[in-house]
Length: 125
Image 1 (tube, rainbow, N blue to C red):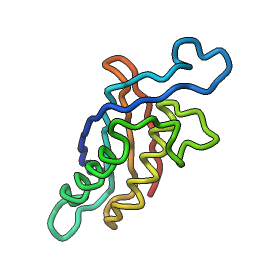
Image 2: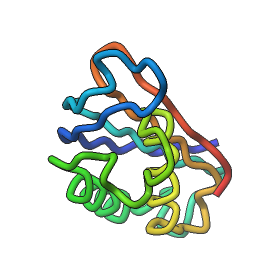
Image 3: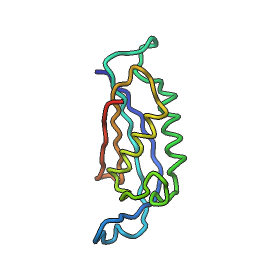
């Protein structure tokens, strides 16, 4: 299995909407790092799994979308707790809509909310 990984980072805000959220229930910032890992069993005619320019453009769009925003105000989080796990799923869905190389069969998204905590979502594409 081949894989290609790209990264970006940005600062965004959120607050948790669960009962007894404690201090996490108040708006606060995270310096998020987003890692996309594209996987597949074959390479394309140029001998790569994904066009890194396309992957980086998808990342740039993500960073532009979420930088300096309150995630709770974004339509994709309506009715959902904007946890780092949910954020990984939202990013997965946005990226798979933008990067559609036939050689990519799986995508893993990892979102770090600080140096010690991350969540991932991965699935077939």
